[in-house]
Length: 156
Ligand SMILES: [Zn+2]
Ligand SMILES: [Zn+2]
Image 1 (cartoon, protein in one colour):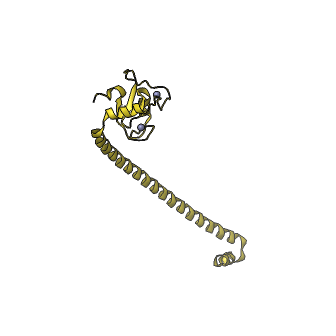
Image 2 (cartoon, rainbow, N blue to C red):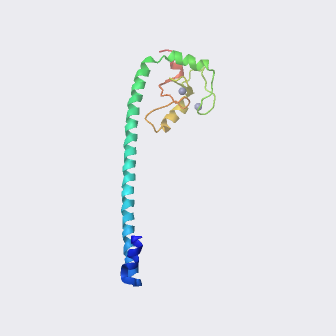
Image 3 (cartoon, rainbow, N blue to C red):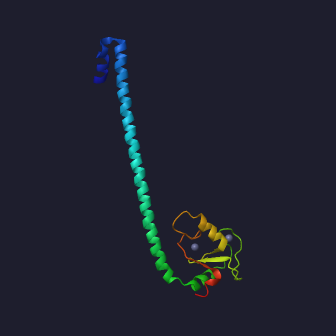
């Protein structure tokens, strides 16, 4: 209400002066708005930077954890058992291309992952090429894995 009173008193009833006064007010408000927008933008920038930093951090932590897991994992891997598990499932489709995998001939076209899932060598290699993460996860069960040619897994 004070503002409205000031508005009416300004320019002493002179229409032009009152308009000038109004214009000045509007300019002030606009530049204030501009400042608020600037501040908001830098806050958003800060937030995005923070998100970026956290992502990098968790990626690093994940990477370390993953390497640690793999090291532990590698020691305990019993490829013969993994291979029998794969055989006992009696699934002979490659989950990537849905074509048959040949588990009987030793022609080095089949890869066995440590999670016991079986893929065409070419299919899992293309999958790995497309993988943008540091971590390689089995396309089927999402576990980190080691990989062997299917027919090598019986003699280690
Ligand atoms: Zn395949
Ligand atoms: Zn798997």
